[in-house]
Image 1 (cartoon, rainbow, N blue to C red):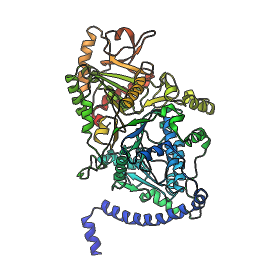
Image 2: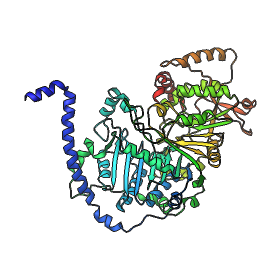
Image 3: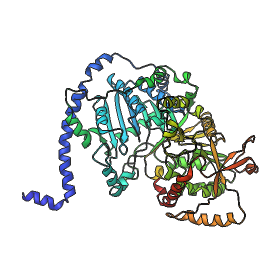
Image 4: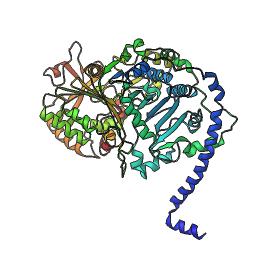
Length: 608
């Protein structure tokens, strides 16, 4: 009793309760470990039925074998969401030893379940599957997540940098993280890696969710991945291992909500993954995924032989207090900055959120000073296409500086571009399926913003740079303050003219007048424009008050029967007409909301 009193004197009540909780949780983990083994044993009969099934043959695997004793790479640029899902399913079916997946977001919708079902089949034929997911946003309910974790002994879940003791955070967990553990809660693992047999990888911006694979009737992301074959995959695997083995990567069964459900599971019941409810939606893709050479099926999955490829990755210790281990994978993004600074003629970049760090502003200012003729072309979202209104507001706040001082040629993506069927071949099918199922579709779906034309929209989520049509950079990095200062990110730098020209062409289609509006200086109104500009400049400098409604820039579109010209061409004003700052958005209510966001989110830009 005296000993207990001494302990209580040294520890506050919260610490003591946490200590008791850890002891109890450890007991739950031991028992839940026994439960998970019992539940996984239920699949032995099913495993026996498919034990003799071999992985499918694949051009990618054969190319990987060829490169084992030599240098060089083969790359495939994946711009279409359906191609991205097809590639992943194909690679899962080719796996012989291991599959490692690292992602910020995995949602247990139709695509999320379909991918997991394929992983389960791979696990049953002996493939070791490791799934590392950021813990902030849950995959699904705790019940479904528990089923996934108990599905097979060859599948292991870990969650990175948890903000609570639950795998599925409660509202109180988010509130506690925001107010009491802000620094920890704000540091997220934004990596996206998909690795098969430690010799084939996919890196890019896509999470696992319907919207990333062109299967959402409301809102889809236009994203970009690169399939990589070659020795750079060794570095990707090494990077994955560093995150997987880090102390912030918590085993799934150690969370309270998962452990308690495992304890409650009956040993005689089939507690594992039941499978998706309607697999018929994936029949066509499933058949295509069994083919040997995807590059022969779809011209969009072209293979590029490339010699020079470098992989960059942040350490799991990034922005952590008292960080000592910065990892063994190349993490000095200064090298990428040097490539950008050495741009000579043309720098093209695409990002969903056009917000620059103060360091990036200084860099671009110096580049503009040293090379006045350098073209800097930016592809990003309009208010009508963005998925984050507050982030757009923070970006919009800096438009004058971006256009006037840095001379960016900014193109804001249309929510339904003219080339949407080329960008998203499943577009008409997705709409047809849901119009048939939901006759009220055109008026039912209006999120995240009300548009004049209702229906499904497309949002840029790709993160890419092309330097002088020779160097390409693709990855998870948004080139914004959050990616630079808070989240862990990964990038692939590709030194190849053929690949880079095709990437530049892809982004060029996005920035064309068919698919984007051009941001330019608002046409002057004598006297009024002068005084308005002074007030707007002063207002934009204020961190928490920016209410002046008249801005320096607006959006333009090409007039009929006119040929497009660059932003700073002398004929621009004659060939383009203004469509307002926020075209396609129904502003009766939204404009007010945007103005409020613009007024009060300036101080939060470094966190975006």
